[in-house]
Length: 249
Ligand SMILES: O=C(O)[C@@H](CO)OP(=O)(O)O
Image 1 (cartoon, rainbow, N blue to C red):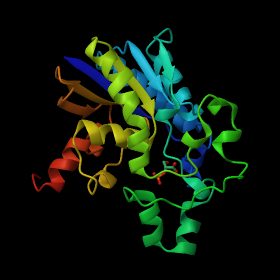
Image 2 (image 1 turned 180 degrees about the horizontal axis):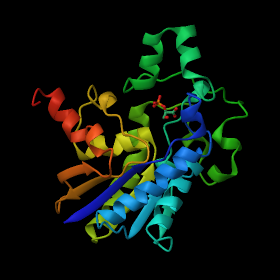
Image 3 (image 1 turned 90 degrees about the vertical axis):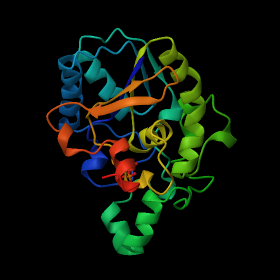
Image 4 (image 1 turned 180 degrees about the vertical axis):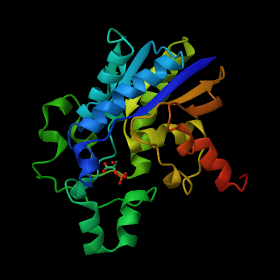
């Protein structure tokens, strides 16, 4: 019944520099822009025409959406930008190099910070100038709702009202919904969609700039999911990761 396209932003400058990014508003690299454009071309080639879009308030996702829509000549589509689609907030790690942090704190600790479901990295101090409360784009959000750090669990919790509310309503109304977002906010969505357990979700790696298309039934449960484009076969879909973890090959 419904069709949903999930698109992780193209390569960002800090993806390239291997830095913890979170809510830092870094832009795409040239490669990231090219990936976003190709994502649009791949949608067009597959005959998939989004009718409604959601994205975060971070420019790497917004620009990915712009380029993808430009490539499909659908820049006129309605777009909702919502902070609840932001990347998970990485707290005091934001800006640090991932390899240098692993040298300092050990691979195991950094893996826990990056991939555990509910163990947070160190938080920003309440007076840290990098705090989202200093940023005008979050001015309408109550200060105590704005995070100083987030786990994946917290990211899923802040995302769910948007998913079960406006996004689900749009899908039920027959819209073909395109969501351009981030590695961990999209982990939250596929966790819900594909019913992926907490200990398996860290193994789901959504590649940058490759559309992941879901066909949904009337209860918004997945009938099928697939990546588009030339590199599609190189990536396991979240449903395949879940089946492999359950011993289903
Ligand atoms: O730095 C980040 O914000 C995220 C996504 O790039 O990194 P990680 O792979 O650790 O979730």
